[in-house]
Image 1: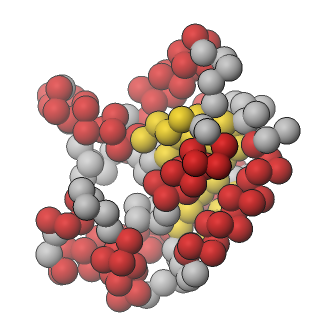
Image 2: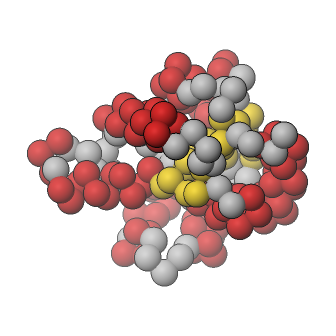
Image 3: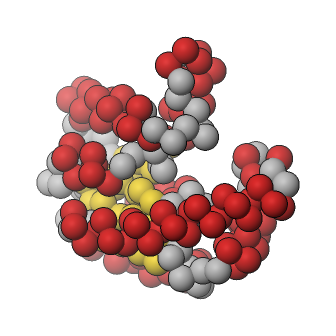
Length: 185
């Protein structure tokens, strides 16, 4: 069985897909956002925050953790999901014999459509609940741009890019069926 690394745009369906993989295949979930929250709370001097533009700060820690996990528990299967890992670093560090990599994004959405999706899919404890509509609109404009960049980077690094712009639930369900062939062997 392979592990799964889910990267991509914030609010693109990474956590939803991770939960689906967990429910269907039993993979444990490693949420990079949880690492960021823990580091922000316990070591604020490191300067890692959810709003940090330097995503590379947390990525080396995540890869060191994954290497230690693989060494100590090679029988464990897990799905890692998060926004804070640059695709270039994932291409350099990830062992593709052990991981399937999927990148999610929504490059075709308008800012207004992305805004509606944020409100539609937002969970009880999502950070977006505390944001104003104007803040969310500005955020999704950046994430749409990131999605377009991710789609191009995926070609460069030979990662699978999945567009969740429209029919997100169906797209993720179809992806889950396809992943079954790749992570269960």
